[in-house]
Image 1 (cartoon, one colour):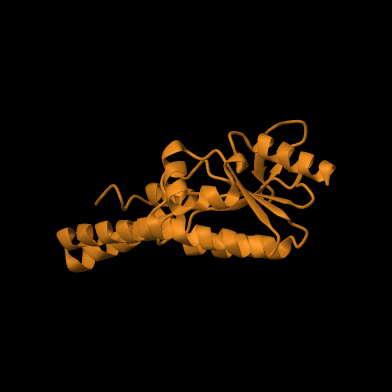
Image 2 (tube, rainbow, N blue to C red; image 1 turned 30 degrees about the vertical axis):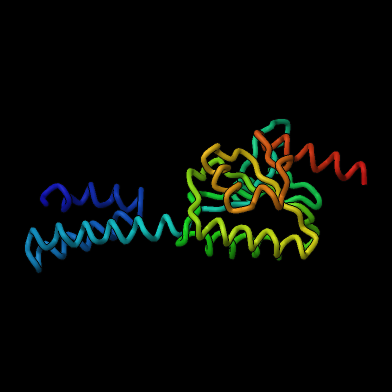
Amino acid sequence: MLHLTKPSYLRELFGRSRWSFANCVIVILGELTLGVLQGIALGVVLSLLTLIYLTSHPKVAELGQLPGTEAYRSVRRRPEAATFPGLLIWRMGGDLFFASIEHMSTALKASLAARPDVKRVLLVCAAVNFIDVSAGDELLGLIKELQKMDITVAFVRVRDAVRDDMKRAGIEAIVGAGNFYERTTDGVHAWQRQGSVA
């Protein structure tokens, strides 16, 4: 308790994480007003609620290629990152399950609305460790919706276990096994070849 109330610690915590700072202040107030055990229990509940919120709102981003490299970074954070005409490279920032798929779907549609030229979405799945049944069904529905808009979907860096779940959900069948790539660059080159053929 004494450690938490040190002004230097609180200042450092405020600078590092607003979430943690707010939780810390609430726990301190809870311990002072409700008692130590109740304050600790309040801290546990707040930590669980924070975890639920963060996992259900994964950090997603449109990616672009850094000049002269094969590195792809958020175009919001790195304005010099180049995007490609007709191609949206989009990073899914966490696991896909019933609580996160709606956020992911809404954010992707917002990115597409800002890029009406897009004809292909390249989903980067490096941060996805699992996909549950509900998310698999929702993702399949989203892909079908995009295909009706003449937008194709491909995947990059999908873990084997996640790809197995995608197969069972029918996702691989609808996008095609050839639309899964090991590297983002491979997916970009495939799009560029497709454009040159067209």
